[in-house]
Image (tube, rainbow, N blue to C red):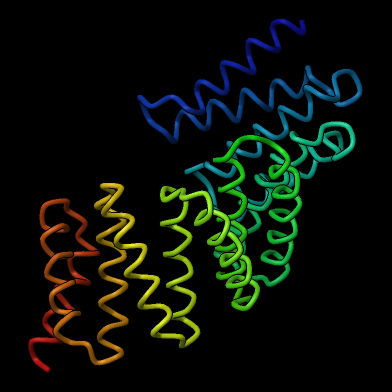
Length: 276
């Protein structure tokens, strides 16, 4: 029975991540599979496997396309909290951290949806706990993700001082390591934060720094996003000529890589500058 349960678990994971067919249908099949599996993998008989299935079911609910978003997130949060009953920091520290990270994602998304302050506060706590464990591993992507998501969550919750302090620490870490792949998005978040809090010159410098790094990385999509953000700041500070030149560069990118919403935004800003 345990072997069959393992096969079902792997099949559910494969279906959940399957790139072909209907994404919505695949997730429904995976959710049904995990729920069926929990009838076999009970907490009493197979506690560790039960926790793993709860964690995976939570991720499936968080990704679910059908149903109400708030209800799906509620189910996801409940599953992650169930998993944490077994995945404790003392018994399974890395699994505990991964589930805390997943829980943080779901709480943050529920905050974005419902704007409940307790959700963003709990998301910050979950990310911080996950980060403390991830920092002890050698997985640099895992460490970066926990740093980055925590910084963004501070930002989204309006904790600007904490966000700047946290991201400046990350900035110094990746600057010393000369890790431009991770440094570029950190600089982008810092630029947005300084812009949001009225530190316009510092924001402009960070936008220019991260734009240079994204271009060096050949990441044209993020470079275009930074260019639009920089242009908005330049308009605010009266640097109209620079803003117009940057927006024209972004316009070319979005014309060749269709993104109707971003192209409309760029065209609107250019029209405003031309009529000013």
